[in-house]
Length: 98
Image 1 (spheres, rainbow, N blue to C red):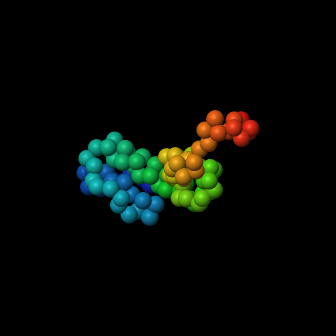
Image 2 (spheres, rainbow, N blue to C red):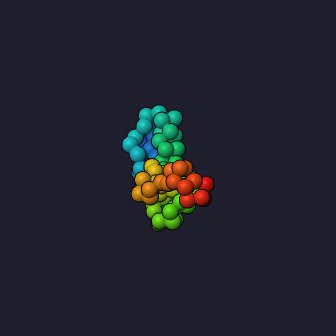
Image 3 (cartoon, helix red, strand yellow):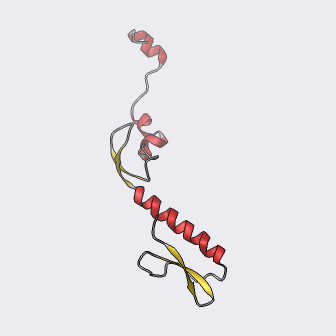
């Protein structure tokens, strides 16, 4: 839990941080303020999961968006494959390694 909460503000509602500081505009509807509260909590949790990780494909260190993000951008988009020339099946047969 992020510690964010809803607080009355005049005739409306605001999202406040753990320190009580206002983090949103004033919402006339408590439900809309609750939606914004959920968005801010999700953002805080996602930010907390970010860290430097080693790519599972090439080993390069990169800024990961979370536990689900284990491949660097180059490996995820296929760039390293383009850097290394691929051997054709016929070349592999000619070498006797296929």
